[in-house]
Amino acid sequence: MLNARDILETITMIQDENLDVRTITMGISLLDCCHSDVDVMCRKVYDKITRYAKDLVKTGEQIEKEFGIPIINKRISVTPAAMILASCENRDAVKLAKTLEKAAVTCGVNFLGGFSALVQKGFGPGDRELIEAIPEALSVTDHICSSVNIGSTKAGINMDAVALMGKVVRKSAELTADRDCIGPAKLVVFCNAPEDNPFMAGAFHGAGEPDCVINVGVSGPGVVRAALAKAGDCDLTAVADLIKKTAFKITRMGQLVASEASRRLGVPFGIVDLSLAPTPAIGDSVAYILEEMGLECCGCHGTTAALALLNDAVKKGGVMASSHVGGLSGAFIPVTEDAGMIHAARCGALSLNKLEAMTAVCSVGLDMINIPGDTPAEVISAIIADEAAIGMVNSKTTAVRVIPAIGKSVGEELSFGGLLGSGPVMPLSTYSPAKFIGRGGRIPAPMQSLKN
Image 1 (tube, one colour):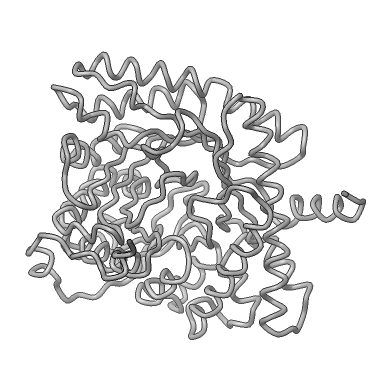
Image 2 (image 1 turned 180 degrees about the vertical axis):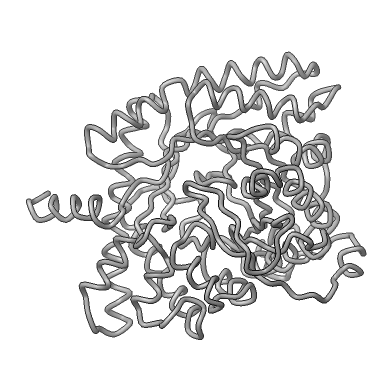
């Protein structure tokens, strides 16, 4: 039963500690839109998305007003576009991207994810056409997000796809160099991609999902940091307990919003994603949580251990608060989107190598990292391969979203605005992995894939 103290506590979390629901994401299956004629398919895609999502934004805004809970984004995810593109005789992936953009604008959503391909074990019909179209598609649209799954614990890593994605990331940056290289900020390369992730840029609606579903992503790193600040000097067991209790409260709010959105839209409730998603706002930072635990600066020795404690406690607290937890569900560490991470990168405390170690214990990977503009495609591919290997061996989701800062070098800055934030160009190793990447083929699945 709610009491006055609970209500006041929640109001404080929202007003002073940046508590919000980061996104309501409607997942829509496009499998029944397949057609051999690309124009007919695009018309069916547009009609279905706009029919299902016409009230999504309005409903989110109504819930915000009635409950006083900020809902920052209203988004759509769709079936991986390569799957429906495969049915076309003329596989015009850019035309499909423009159709998705038109639907997103009509519905008024912030982003639409699902310009995606799943190639962990090889390329199927439509996959290459879509992947090769990603740079142009992201350059001619504003709301479309793209993802490619290149590996899994069960399948291993498709190194031919990894090599291709290095080129795609680089070309995406080149085509949007006049807009601070925004293209690759909307592109994620996954290992073990989940099918119900509500967060961009990696959201897509998996083939095993219902025809339509509502998924919600919660946030609240500022709330966790504030709770730790109030707790004072306590041991790490007490820190973990406090984080669990706070994560429970945050997730209950997400569950409430998800249930209400599901009921009002007449769409099944899917999952609540427990991820602590930071923003560039001061105080709304995962890095600041780690520093509140006792680190002088995020990135120093001890950071990986502190992050492991945080990630585990968030999950333990969150799963008690919702019947259906899914997506990524962890602590995000996107460099340009987190005020504390930005500071740590600028002062040199946070390196790419440290970030790679940290991603072994959290969600999701090397995320929103600006790299030198002259970085060769094979180096980008090698970064993807390293991160995918962590995900494959540890049976977890990992991902890479790096932005080659065309025309800029280490220490200079890119600024994307909004939730995507800004940050410095970080240094990379100058030694070449070109021969390794050039071998192609597949890295076999690890022994732990044989669970049957």
